[in-house]
View 1: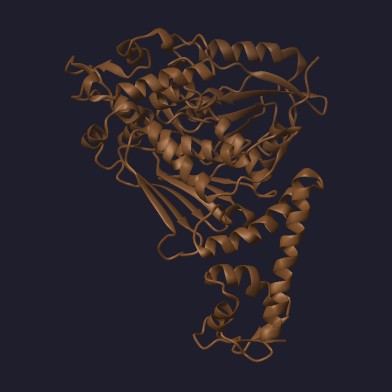
View 2: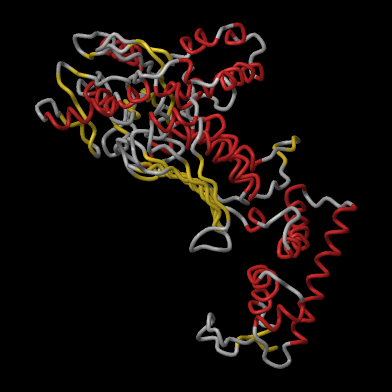
Length: 507
């Protein structure tokens, strides 16, 4: 019995043909130009082919007596290097759509440039374009396919320029996912060779460690010698939006970079309460892990563009240079995952910091919806790859001991956490909840005092000095703005809210 087509594929069909979706009627026989489409998809960004569907999206179905014949013919042809070179290993699937059979073909991005009948096809909009005689377009296609070679370059450095402690750390980290991982019994050189981090230069015949090995395990001075443009800039712009509240410029190996960027995020983002089913999870930590691993592993290291990790009041985002063959916002349902730097991705998978290809986007999407109260992340691809995670108010409330301003915010942080935890856990009532309720009442009492003090117009400086509140941003966010929005106090010159002569008076 033919299974029903999954909902995500049905949604894809309803949107119609596009850069990564193609319909072929193929009602009684396989459309011959389907191989050109498969070749173009393989050369570009991958795609989805539906047989038994007209160009306008109408489902006619593949006739039952030819379904198996068409599927067999397709598999035989794409594995025939005289027709498709190099051969593609793709398995078509058949699904039921309203009682009609549709054959679905998922075409992944190819590692090499694919030719169909000796010709090279590329995808542009809804069309398959023959670019065989367009030398520049062919060059760009080949260059994009072999971008991973950059980190496979053999350097003039040797194992002695790497840090043995980092290699040992990676060896131990494999124990978390596999207690019998082969790396645990290998010597350092054997480990590096098994990970593809020691290679032989095909032109010179010289053997040595690769750029990927330097990034993963190199001494800082070695990294700067091999990759002078490499660094990651971490910034917080919550209060001081012109410059920054905190900053860390990270120029070190990828393992230590992961730790420092993660610690930076943990320092400035609240770890709110969430249940995934019946299990308590740290959505913050999962999101940080996924976006930081992506930032470190999938950037274009040949670019001078400085990678960034930025936390703002209403969002955080990462940016890195990328050699992309498409532009725009990625759709989780149709995006085709492609490893930008396979040597790095392999090591991160082995040590448990990354999972299978494409899982990072799915996890970021899932846990952002939990962490940010239903909001969704966006992934924008182009010359610069950007991941944006929206943040709710509680995420950037300062925590922990510090200055007087920090302590003021700590008092109100408890009230914010109380509201958030009540929604996340279904209305838990506890001793902590009682304490948080008390803190909420303290804020309300102080707001009442501010209203009373504003029986005559007062400046913000007068108000802060009178109530002993050191942080102007804290005072404005927790006390002043809520009172203005509620119509309980008003500005004396509302047409110039940022005027230095601005005062506030009870409404």
